[in-house]
Amino acid sequence: MNGLRSCIFAATMTVTMAGAALANSEGPIPGFTGAPGMKGAEPEMTCQSCHIDYALNPDRLGRVELQGVPPVYQPGKSYTITLQLKHPTAKRWGFQLTALSTPNYTAAGDFAALDKTTQKKTAAGRQYIEHGSIGGKATGMGKTGGYAWTFTWTAPKTNVGNVAFFAAANMANGNGDLTGDRVYASAKPLFTSRAGAK
Ligand code: HEC
Image (cartoon, protein in one colour):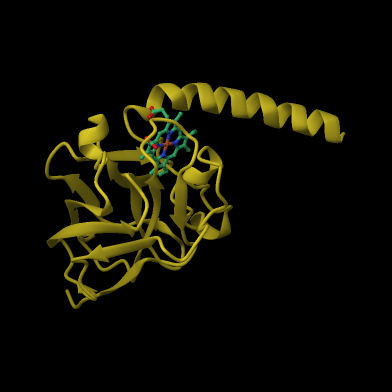
C-alpha cells in the first residue's frame, strides 16, 4: 500500500515538475501561497514544494511586508499596493499573493499589474498577483537587501466581510535553479482589511 502510494506521489510530482519547469519562466504556477483552503479545505502548498533545499521559513531574517492596503476598505475602491521583501543574503526575489474573504476564504477583489514586473493569474476561482515573466528584470536579479513590486488591488464591489492577504515569497540565491533558495509563507494573513461602510 505504501509502495503504491509513493509511486502515485512520484508520478504526480514528475508531471507537476515537468509542467512547472516549462511554466516557471512565465512566473510560478498559481495556487502556491500557503493560504488556507476554501471552507476548511487543505491549505495551498508553497514555493517550498519545489524550492526544497531549506525548510519553509528557515530563519527569522526573511521579511514579507504588504504596504498600502487600508485597515478598512471601501467597496469598489482601487488601492496601490507594494509587496516588500527583505533578506540580508538573497540575490533574487519572487512572490505570489492572494486576497480572500474570511471566514470562508473565497476570492476577494481584483488584482491588476501596473507594469511587466508583476502579472495576474487565476486558479480554482482565486486570483493571484506574482512576479512577472520577464526573468531577471521582474525578480530583482542581483539586488541585495530587499526588493519590492507595486500593483493595484480593487476592493470587492460589495461588503464581503474582512479580506485577508496571504503571500509566499522566495528569497533566492539567483543561480537560476531550484537550489539554495529560501521560501517564506504563513498560514496567518500578512494583513487583514476590514469592510468599510457602503
Ligand atoms: C512546481 C515547481 C515550482 C514551484 C511550485 C515554484 N517554482 Fe520557482 N522555480 C522552479 C524552477 C524549475 C525554477 C528554475 C528554472 C526557471 O527559473 O525557470 C524556478 C526558479 C525560480 C526563481 C529563480 C531562482 C534563482 O535562484 O535564480 C524564483 C525567484 C522563483 N522560482 C520564485 C518562485 C516563487 C515565488 C514560487 C512560489 C509562489 C515558486 N517559485 C514556486 C519551479 C517552481
